[in-house]
Amino acid sequence: MADVATRIIRIDPLTPDPALIGAAATVIREGGLVGFPTETVYGLGADALNPAALGRIYAAKGRPPDNPLILHLSSLDQLVWVAAEVPASAYPLMQRFWPGPLTLVLPKSPRVPALATGGLATVAVRIPAHPVALALIQAARTPLAAPSANRSGFPSPTTAQHVFDDLHGCIALILDGGPTAIGVESTVLDVTCTPPILLRPGGITREALETVSGPVRWAVDAQEQQRSPGTRYRHYSPRAPVLVLETARPDILQHQLTAALQRGQRVGCLLHQLEL
Image (cartoon, rainbow, N blue to C red; front, side):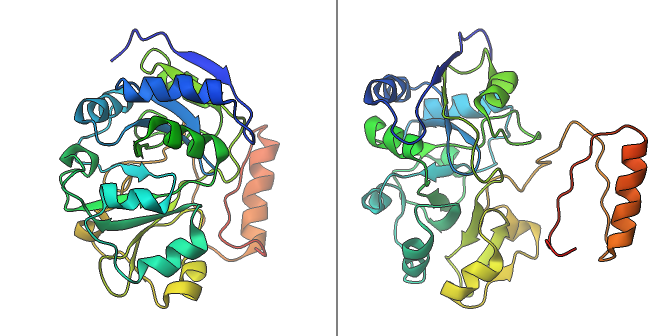
């Protein structure tokens, strides 16, 4: 998929211009693709109830069609469009973490095309905490299916330029709302079972979830994990060497950092604990 003239439009991330949002919503309603900011990463949005538009997402990203998508809503009222039912355990989580970087896996409504869910009987849903995203969903008058706006297998985009670098020529429009606040994907939690299953870590920690839901367990096998978007295939692969250190010793980390800097390398560290 290529040869689409991709436009980047700068938009105020706090008070988005209704005219610009309206133009993007028109692209969505016509079955096109729009890159837009959320609080986590930039999403690649399409009408979640339009199978042809969903197919364009998979084609643009080079994403396998059995890898489900996250559906983005602008309000709880839209849940009836996408979920057959909502377990009682989901409501306290929605009240605490929505809008925000938590995706809940729910029983799928028959209205949702199979292409949106990878053929599964469940659907992944969240309400984003970003004025541009919410305004776009409201103006489009439909839930948006929106995986990260990048080629599959590579790091998720946190700026509009990242989206353009990966997908120019494949999508019609990118709304540039500046860099995203969180920079990692949403946490994915399956609430169709008890206790809930953490399918993908992200912007909300397991510990934070457990203050609301009680015990949460990790997904332990591939069958459980396949209910989550973005976990079935290689994901988040940076175009740079990565060294994984399984240690709690700061001196080992410091040694590796010093050696890399002495080689003239630029280094970034991703730590699980700040006190390390």
